[in-house]
Amino acid sequence: MTAIQLFQGMRGRIFLFLAVGCVLVVQPKLTEAQTNYSPASSAYHNIVRVGANKPLTPEQRRRDYKLTPRYPGRPLVMMSIAGGGSRAAYYTACVMEQLAQIPSPSGKGSILDEVRVISTISAGSLAAAWYVLHYDERHQPDFFERFKKAMSANLQWRAYGHMAVFPPLALQLVATPITRTDLLANEMERLLGAGMVTFDNLRELETRPHDPPPTLIINGTALNSGQRVVMTNLPPSRFPTQLAEVGPSVSLSPTDQGILQRLVQPLTFEDFGSDIGSFRLAQAVAASAAYPVALAPVRLNIYPDHVPRELLGRADEALLESKYLYVADGGVYENEGMDPLISLIRTLPANQPIFLIAIDASQRMETVRVTGHKIWDPFSVVRKLYDIGTLRPLAYYGSILGQYHNPDAFDGVMIRMEGYEETTDRFLQSIPTMFKLSSRHRRALDQAAFENVERMRGELRRAYLRLSNTKGKR
Image (cartoon, rainbow, N blue to C red; front, side, top):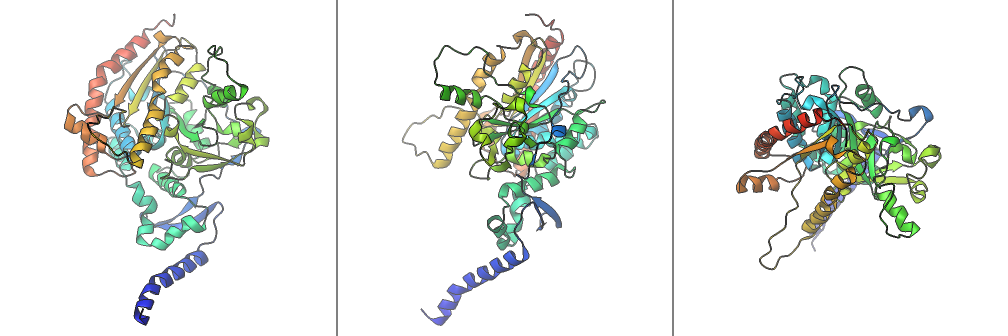
């Protein structure tokens, strides 16, 4: 090897060494926050580690409040929003735009105006959070154009583009506690456009006496225990276990009984001794969207000494003996956002008329026709595991709900992303669940939302009117 070849081989290593040195000197190790530069914004902004949650204090416990219909004598309207990257976020904005144009059968406002609770997963949480934070602007002429523009933003570039412009900055993910999920959370906060909103700030909106926005429920999955993590201002008492008081006549060991009970017991911040009031909304959205492998789970501190006495038992002892709780994408548990609503409905009067509107832009779990040898690549297998595990519970929710709520006082309509001819449907299903969309994708989702809502318009009206006339008797 000549001296010139040796120099050429070493040049890249020398540059990397100098770059590493510069980054490590200029950027001290992070603990809570750090000022950093993003070429997407051309401005400095704070990067806060997502898991910076605080211990619970008695005065910060969530106080209960009534969940009532927007108008007396009408159904309590709930909405669930499935996950699925920017495809789900943008489709949700498009569906909401269409629902806002359907007059409520009550004669006041639109069907969308009557939604009182929204439970959501992953990127669906981004759309729900944007809608709730900008709720007072919903009647402005450009509201939905701004909404859809925000949901179609290229979050992948905004969050990670500075690494492409100057690759050594990627070392912040190695030399500091910052993760890709932290970067995503900060860009989501900028996209939400309301500043550093905490759950305490959100509660002021949700509980105000005049025209409050819907109560927001953002969902994640606890990798430690497999439980649903519910991030909301509603108290733990609103999320009881889904198991019936008298279970099936199957003998289980105490260990298995504990596992079964725990898996269907939603977990709130208070259950592991933490204060959600000071937790930032964008951090919850990012945690809900932390898809395994692609994004790191969010690490939350566990404060066992701060768990209220009456909540002991909702979280496993082994969990409370842990230092951290790791929260991943809510779709790992169930991707429709319906699961926490089933628990919530259990706390309402059995004869309370409830109308559920489900928005679903996820891929359908259809049988694959295999006519010859097929090689199942790892990504296809993971996707199948994800879909099977999250869609299977939907088959049982109706029977679970019927155990403690009057079936005559419940109705639901699902608005699902689908095309009505094969080519269109195949294209919609091919839109990737990433945090970016092409203009072609946006046009297709806009058209699909219009057609999907239009097809369900009659069902929306029928269900609402039927529940409005419900006498509340079995």
